[in-house]
Length: 337
Image (cartoon, rainbow, N blue to C red; front, side, top):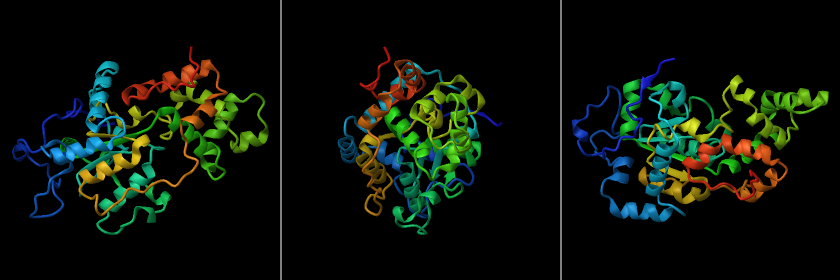
């Protein structure tokens, strides 16, 4: 597999606009989608002297400013990780590219990624789509509808990472995990997940399973799911599925310098901030969720109530880096001592 030294591994701290004309544009890479016009890129809007906009963005974040989140992430990376010097195309498959608006978005399942993909389909479709909610959820996830960074050449990858606004949305790790379990193992329509993962989980972690359970895999308990996740054999056999893979393993936030770290807990104002930076705030609105059964801390606490301290501790250690990197506190309901 092709790998290369990541010249963005420490983050490009040069401000866009300073010496920008001195950089050579890679062949085939458009810096502006509108010929003859020089538009302000989202990255320039964020970093270059638009104080009024910066002040507005900082007010939008519920607990920390967007700048503060970036700084916290950077400090956590310095404190808790050893930086890899190479990335492969496989590592970049979750980074969606919108050349028209100079955006790179790393999608994380169970963190509003369906709606973000819908938004990016509208932004990059050239008018084919106008309303995100008119795009069926399954169509938003079709491979090929959106370009990923892994599809570009190495020079094109580096050019985009230097000059595009890179953003990510994260979520409290255990709330995301419970949401993934509820969606993939308690919904009757997810037969593919039941067959692919449920049968394996039941075979490995359920004493004396019924033949029907072994065949269908559609009644996996949360405890069995947790046992599967912390079992050392699981990751030796294959990588985690993206729905429960750790965010740091999907998006590499200690190698790729994300300009905006949005949070699911403040989704609407943070999404609005990204759309404002992209210059489309007035023409496009981020879809709001109408779900009344959204997984929150109280619901996660109910699921963890019947998980022993032994497994709670193992699971926390497994997801510890996501808690540290994105400044999430250890849940009060955990009994890990």
